[in-house]
Length: 186
Picture 1 (cartoon, rainbow, N blue to C red):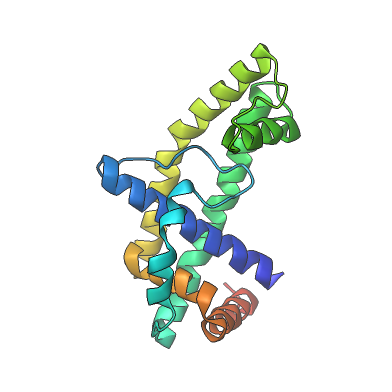
Picture 2: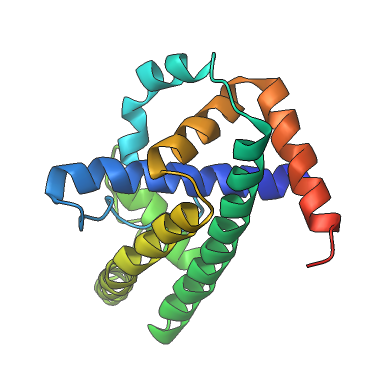
């Protein structure tokens, strides 16, 4: 279970990577390219290979581990809320989540096909995307605030998240802190 939680946390960090990269292009209020209904990394993540190389030698103090885990737990909570809101947006539009995902995957694929979607389904799909884009900016701001409130800069949070993907010992330290913080009474 802790792998799943930490994996979601790292995905949340990657969402933030995408929102920061896009935000730099559009002013700080920008949003990333489309939603990620299955929590796939944003398109902006494709620019990261050079950045990942830097993360291999990252030094992270025990205090930063604690701050990261605190922030990551908040990001996970925000992520879960985002998934609920996304499900509600899909349901409100009268579409099933599975069908939305099929159409979305088709739209994101190289072929850009329509997954044999009817015109009505494509209208529903676009309406759902519009609603999610409206919510996205607030969600990204909430994630940034959670990270800042935990005592880390967005950049440092992202460095630690990238480092954890490359360094198994850092990942283990984060998992141990996550486990102990979940076991501690709150």
